[in-house]
Image 1 (cartoon, rainbow, N blue to C red):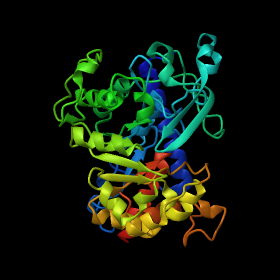
Image 2 (image 1 turned 45 degrees about the vertical axis):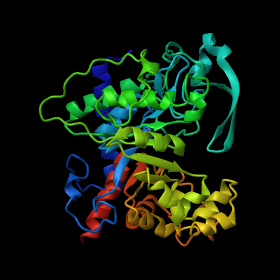
Image 3 (image 1 turned 60 degrees about the vertical axis):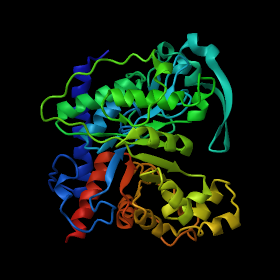
Image 4 (image 1 turned 180 degrees about the vertical axis):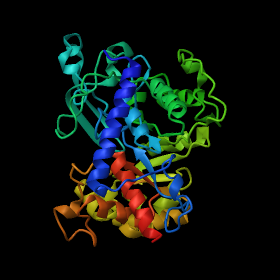
Length: 427
């Protein structure tokens, strides 16, 4: 196996190569110089419609999954080296109570778990409720059934559905704990000399809390861990007595002059989002929304604004609109209820309506340009008044709406487009 130092060098080399190729692709042979942190050179430029008046914040979706296996150590390194403003982990909970980083509740599509005979007996089927929707997954290995020791046997792979992503880093990196992720970001802050935001998403809290000693076990475990690493302050006391087994590493003091970046919570479970907001200070909550019709009304925004500082819808809500997107998800709604809440907000007005309530907007996910953008209008041009035809058109449209954060893949590409738009709006 490679040493940590060698892997760090490898990430630097890869990031430099990718950056050079993308600069050549998008800008020809002209040199491009940017400053650190990523938005520093644009802070004083007018023309941004964001709530802060500053350029949108770029969140590295699962690190830098366009080039590295998602949520791996190298994925987080590369996201930092490419200049992400935030680096995202997704949180899951093992059978023995350890917070680990993985997007899905299962492991078969992004690890080598199927190749490990000693874990074959853990393959099973599960059904659970997620925001009122029934989720059924068959013939999979679930994190909640595995101990940390079992999870640590695994190695992360690129999802084989995305064959254009580099496959030669497969099976090099183990699944990380939440604590290891936080240690990585702290170390990157020191080594690179700039801060990075952390933005953990709590995946399926009710699924992971089922069978625990109390119904907020997952949330409190995450709060205590983030607080220990100085990215959160507990504002309302949590059930510490249920977590006496949580053994976190002692902190090393940061060098003089080095400061940690900001933090935020994420969850699709709005009960969890509200709980996190109530129990931590100075950690804004991102309410992830996709299949809840009432959210996309004036009354819905009023309700969310009481605890969510940021609302994060699937990006097509800003293009095709709520009715069309919800229908594509086979979601129905009570027309009278929606009418009583003020009706569905027009897609191009949603960001402005959120800003009126002092709430930021963070659509997801802006894919690498090798991957289809996945808008409904690309199959039916009658859906929406605008349909992006390429990456630049997509980003410039969302920049014009005033979105505040963007979950992106291929961070170099996203930064180039942000810089290009910044130059355009002050021309």
